[in-house]
Length: 157
Image (cartoon, rainbow, N blue to C red; front, side, top):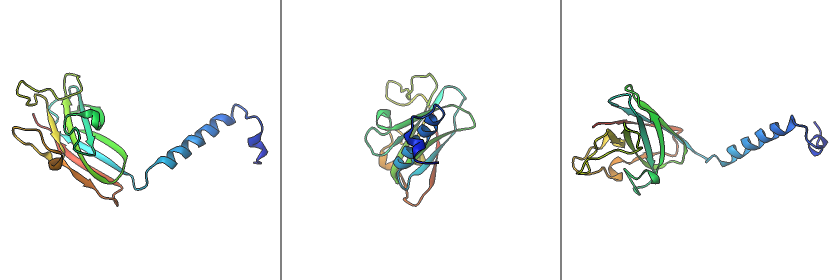
């Protein structure tokens, strides 16, 4: 193929091919070096009702309940477990909070005392009795030489 083929007015068949190549180049160029894929396995889901939310926090800001400060995704609840995947993360310190939203309001409901009435969990399976878990208790480190990392969280009522 000669350079003149690209300089002439494009035919309808050539435009989509160029667009696909351009998008592919952008995706490759913006992928962070040393990126890690994180798989969060959620066990102990009581019933296949509603959805399970996985929130990934890169700092203590908002942990564990302010999902606006986290990368978040929702998966259909399954009694045999749920898997959430976060792709292209830089190595570093993270914590995950999990909520089983049975009524569709995309949060863990609490009673008048502020105690959860829906299933929840955090990384490292931290379960303080009368307070929310702290980021430093739930934090895990993804090393720079990891290509993938997995965390298993058990939810409880």
